Every structure is written in structure tokens, then in C-alpha cells.
Image (cartoon, rainbow, N blue to C red; front, top):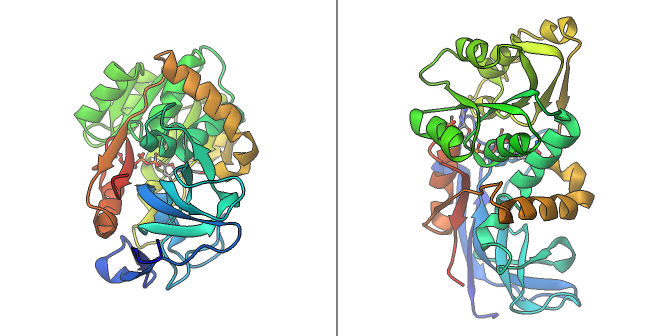
Length: 338
Ligand SMILES: NC(=O)c1ccc[n+]([C@@H]2O[C@H](COP(=O)([O-])OP(=O)(O)OC[C@H]3O[C@@H](n4cnc5c(N)ncnc54)[C@H](OP(=O)(O)O)[C@@H]3O)[C@@H](O)[C@H]2O)c1
């Protein structure tokens, strides 16, 4: 193993707006020998996440920023090729924060074993991974859906949004998705069973909400922030809940985040707006994954992965797909064959 080369990307500079080529530095070095408690993992798939853009910023957040010169943080799934950890052995498949590199040498305590017989490996970065946990806990614990309520979700065809809408349907809600483009809108209605979709690139969102949410919005699951959040605020039902999951429209503008101007709608409607961070629910991931795997098996929950090729060197370009709406489902970078 020690002869193998590890290729990867480190953060070279803090970007302004969307990351550019000079914000990354490429490295190639021999794979380090694992110490006691450590394992060597061959990275097979990496999760590409909008949050990565935030991790590149300096300043206080829910997680430490990636330092300049540090391997770029990334969740991934891989295969253990060498182990000095008592509970892991070569051949095990694992998920964890593997980083943008071909081989990760890290403490085995932070890894979770996964079974490719239960679900294909990329699904552990999707429905049975971080986006799935985000949708599940964000909607159920913060949104608290009740049968008959109207749920609106933005980035509706994406990793988190597509699951939020489907879980809301399972819970007996009426679901309206907001997505960019006719293909994505058709998909969420015809394939995922949403009741309606609004194409924010073609339609006036406020008009679409008026048409599809005649009694107002009970839960708005916000993935995008900006003008769409404002439009949803203007259509709240009494005691509505807004789940602040993300604000992708604001992550890479290079300008200060634009806050909602319609926030007094919270007062008028005795509504609430609550932020969520998926990692707070780590102790309950198993419970959520079991329930979602069950729904998948019953055909009630569809998991869609958009797997892009190119390996580690394609990471900078593929990450940008998220900010251009070019992904269709959970964006996953294939790094290597097993
Ligand atoms: N709080 C947490 O713990 C947590 C955890 C995971 C994810 N998140 C957040 O959840 C959100 C969705 O993440 P994801 O991984 O599921 O990504 P995703 O929805 O699979 O991909 C991002 C999508 O965002 C939409 N988008 C991009 N720019 C936009 C803009 N300017 N205005 C409106 N929509 C835009 C695009 O869809 P269209 O083509 O439809 O525009 C794009 O496909 C992100 O905000 C992310 O940060 C939060």
C-alpha cells in the first residue's frame, strides 16, 4: 500500500463568488502508513454539496472552515484497503469525511460501515446519507407536518428537496415544489407524486403560490433563500413553519446575503422560521435510515443520484454544477472503480 500515490486537492485561496481554478492546489504524494486506530480508505465516490462553498469561507459557522492548505473536506464512500482499527478490516465499505483525494488515512472511529447489498454505494451519500437525514429531520422534527397541510419546498428536484416532498406526501400532505426548468418540474409531479410544481425560471413564484396554495403555506422548506423565500413568506398560513435548511441562491454571489423583507408575515401569521443543521441529529441517523430504507423498499420513496465521472481533478468543475442548476438529483463524483 505504501507504494500507492494519493492524488488530491487542497484549498489554496478563499474564493469570492464561485470558486475558480486558482482557489485549488493539486497534490500527489505517497499514501501514508496508518497508525494505531487508523485505516486507509480507497475513495470510490464523493458527495458534492452546496455547503462546500460555505466551508471555504473564513469566519464562524456551524463547522470549522477548511484551512488554506488543507485537503478539501468532502463526505464520501470508499473501501478499506488497510486497517489498524479494531472494528474495521480490509474490504469493508465505509462512509465518512474522506476529503477530495484518492486515499484517506484517518481514524476509523469517524467512519460508518455500509452494505452495498442493502443499497448501491452512492445511495449512502444520498437518501441514506446526509441529504436524506437533512430532509427527514428538517421536515419531521422542525416542520412537524400534519395530514392535509400544504408543504412547499424549493430546489425541489435536488437531493434534499426531492426527499422532503416525498416524505411530506407519505405523511399525507399536499406538496408544491419549486424548481428550475420544465424537465425538473415535470419530474417532481409525474415521477415523485408532488401535487404541483412552479418553474421559478419561467413563472412568477408569487402567482404560482397563489394558484397552488389557495389556503396558504403551512410548511415552507427553504433550500434557496433570496427572492423565493420572500415570495413564500408572503403566502403563509396561520401558524406556518419555515425550515431554514439552506440558501443556495446566496452562497456564491460575492455580495452580502440578502435577507427577507417580508419577515413581518411571521408576526401576522404567528409563524416561525427555524434553522437546522443535520449534524445535530447524528445520534438518530440509524433510526431515520431504517425508516427511509423501508420506504424505498416499498416503492414509496425514490432516490435519484446524478453520478458524474472524471475523478479528483474534475472536482472543481463538477462542484459548480450545483450553483448552475445542472445537477438532477444528488450530485456524486465517481472517483475510482473498486
Ligand atoms: N442545514 C443542513 O444541515 C443542510 C444539509 C444538506 C443540505 N443543505 C442545504 O440544502 C440545500 C439543497 O442542497 P442539496 O444538496 O439538496 O442540493 P441540490 O438541491 O441537489 O442542488 C442544488 C440545486 O439548487 C438549485 N439552485 C442553484 N442555484 C439557485 C438559485 N440561485 N436559486 C434557486 N435555486 C437554485 C438548483 O436547482 P434548480 O435547477 O431547481 O434551480 C440546483 O440543482 C442547499 O441550500 C444546502 O446548503 C443544508
